[in-house]
Length: 187
Image (cartoon, rainbow, N blue to C red; front, side, top):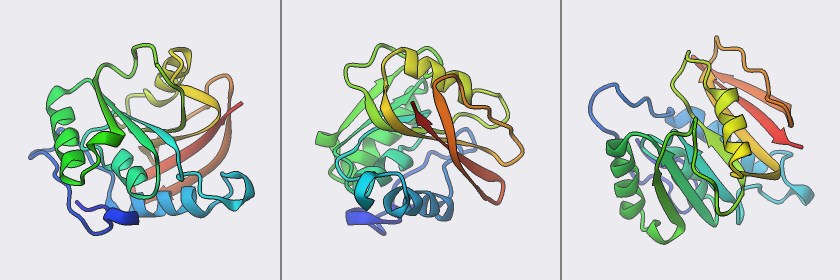
């Protein structure tokens, strides 16, 4: 795996052996971050990523949050219940020199701890096919993780249907092979 854009472009990051963690493919990640950086999601055409506070929930390797940091995000919080996955994400952040811009929390995203600061970009990559995306987003919102007007990206299997939870509006959806990104905005 590698970072596909920004100041860390081309640098490799680690993924644990086996199939327990399913990292987002490089090309799908590149497409998503091009949409977030050059799309219609920031006022005045400025990249949504510049100065963003990011939550990478079900973070696994940390690839999504690290990609955001590489492209100008100010801070990323990495949240995962799997301590081994969080160790990989922490190691990847250290390899890129991003420790001072990152926080790592071992917790269940479906029952998150109370947030100290709301994020304006939420990246949510739950296990496919378990219907976790919308209920987890609602739980994160209730715990104060999601700022008003935040953009939330839910990664899912292309076959999954995701209905936005109350307080969120569907603004875009993109498919890349077996993966889709559902992009929502918090009212």
